[in-house]
Image (cartoon, rainbow, N blue to C red; front, side):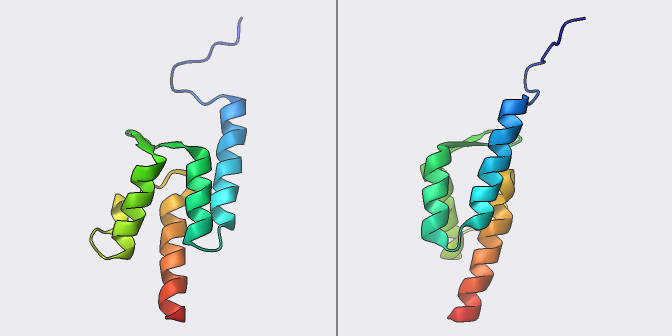
Length: 94
């Protein structure tokens, strides 16, 4: 039997890349570092749609200004969790 991949099924290469992106996001110490990682990724593929880097960054900025809830940030690669973590750090140091 042949190894068949179905559309949308992650490949081993994609899984390695996902792990790399998750680790880069996790390591970001501040929003500037996070934005560099997001730009490096380019397009973030969520469960329902794709998010261009600049749209993700704009949304994070809107969360930081309390214009929208962090629920608008995708959970892909642990991004929402990182934003919440950085917001907590910011509020503790301000």
